[in-house]
Amino acid sequence: MGYETIQYDVEDEIGILTYNRPRVVNAMNGQMVNELVEFWNERQGDYNVRVIITKGAGDKGFCSGMDLKDVQKRGESNDNRPSPDDFYYGQSHFSSIYRLMRSCPQPIITAVHGPAMGGGLSLALASDIRLAAEDAMFCAQYINIGVGGADMGSSYFLWRIVGWGKAAEMCLTGVRIYAEEALRIGLVNYVYPREKLIPAAMEIAKSMTSKSRLALHLTKEALNSAINSTSLEDTIKMEDRNQVFMTMSGMVDTKIKR
Image (cartoon, rainbow, N blue to C red; front, side, top):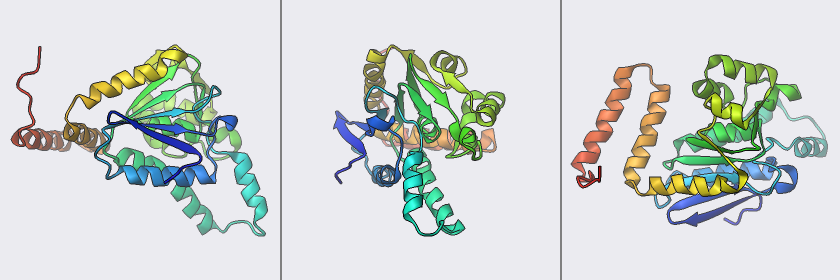
C-alpha cells in the first residue's frame, strides 16, 4: 500500500517506520490511525523484517498525539453527534495499534526527539526499547485535555516501566518529563545528541539482526508473557519451551566468541 501519513523503508532486514505529518508534530489524524492499523496488521506475518525502528519526521518532534483539530473537523462534518457505540468502536480501532505493536514478531526500537505526548507517548511505551534525543519530552497528555488520564494502554505500560508512583503522577497530573529525568526513571534506555539518535537506533537494530530471527520472535513472546504472567512458574515454562525448541532446531551457535 502507498501510505500518505507514514513512511516505511526496509534496510538490511531492519524496517524503519516514520510518522510523517511533520507540520503538526506528527499528530495522528483519522487517516494516520487507519494507516497504522493496516501497517501493524501487515507486520504480524512479516518474518523477513527482523527489527523495526520507529521515529518522527521533521525537526519538531516524535508525535504530539491525536490531532484534535482533525477530530473537531470530522465532528462538525456530521449532522449528529456519534452514538456511544460508534464512538466506542472508533476508540477500539485507534487503541488496536498498541495491541498490534506488542503482538508483532519484530522487536521495536523507538527513537524520540521533541514531544511524545498522549497517543505519541503510548507509541513509545508499546515499544521494546526507547531511545531519546536530548530535547525529548514525554507527557501523558490525556488528562490535560479533559479526558481520563489513562488512555491508549498507558495505564498498562507506564507503571510497568517507571513504577506505580511515577506512573500515577504522570497520568494524574499530565506533568512533562524531559530526557534526563526519563533516563533516570527508566522511561528510556539512553539519551543521545539529536544527530546521534538514529545512528544509535540502527546500531542496536543491527546487533539484533545478527541474532536468530526465531530467537528474536520467541524472546519478545517470552517478555510479553512475563509481563502478563501471574507467577514465576508460568514465566519459566515459557522460557523452557523456547530454549528447548531453539536447541532441538539446531540453531544454537557453539562457536560464540567469549
